[in-house]
Length: 172
Image (cartoon, rainbow, N blue to C red; front, side, top):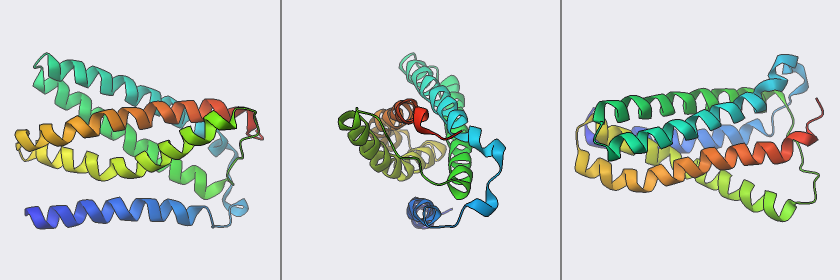
């Protein structure tokens, strides 16, 4: 794929995902609810935890110049993130949003807002970083990966923290 087409694809995906998620919040949900989907927030927290651990391992691998291991781990992190996204969409297509009812809102809401904003921002960064690595443009890959990795790590860890803080308020 030529570089211009690749850029258009990355930006198309990066814009389509948050728009699709926003649409989910306005869809009727009761007719599509399946009880097993009630477990998806917990499953997603587990996926985010695993992704965070894999990202840490990938960072260690690249610092040790274990390039093949780094590549395998990063592809694993990407795969888990895609599965997370699919489960996230499935859950929010079938369930109403849960409201936080605790006394730590001054912690929860800034964490949630930064998590959401950076989750949106991370998509083009991950795709751009991946495309540069796959094209063997490692100088460009390195420069974007130095921004991508900490943001991606924050998104995975903050996602787990958001889940832990809101999980007592799920009705199931």
